[in-house]
Length: 175
Ligand SMILES: C=C(O[C@@H]1C=C(C(=O)O)C=C[C@H]1O)C(=O)O
Image (cartoon, rainbow, N blue to C red; front, side):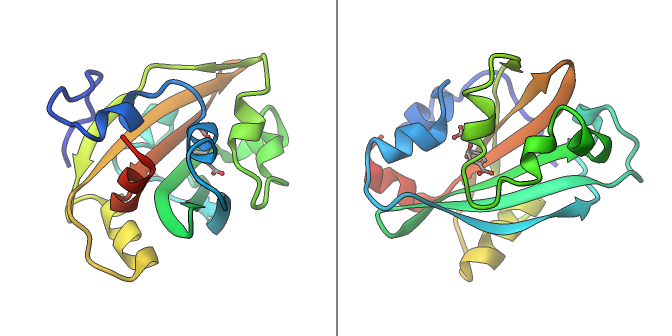
């Protein structure tokens, strides 16, 4: 599996603006298109992907809460977002995830002064990555390789990893 990189790819135009945006992705999308909505694909205890359980500091056999959504704007799917948190934190600092439903995770993250975001990482994913396969399955079509970014949000030291896969349609909202 390809390694995630801290440096935003310089050759990633027109994706670079989306990849490196430090604020809420939800708010950036909402500012550019009508009809924003969060389609919840799943939210349940699952084994994290190979390249993410270490980031949570957890052994591979432990399940974590996995939340997967598709963000829609202007009547088209624009982001597949995949977030994971340790099960015990659902009864602690990340308990707000349990009742989130189809409200964007941004509401729990960007309005809470206790939440800190660690640096973004980037990678281009294809058939070798589970999130590329998930995107194809959920959208019901074969996709090109896709840019993805991820970062850890921490609240009282406890991690929540958020990965965002940018779908081709997001470029229709501008660079
Ligand atoms: C973290 C944000 O929330 C967005 C919404 C998510 C969700 O509802 O699960 C997950 C990641 C983001 O794409 C954001 O807007 O930046």
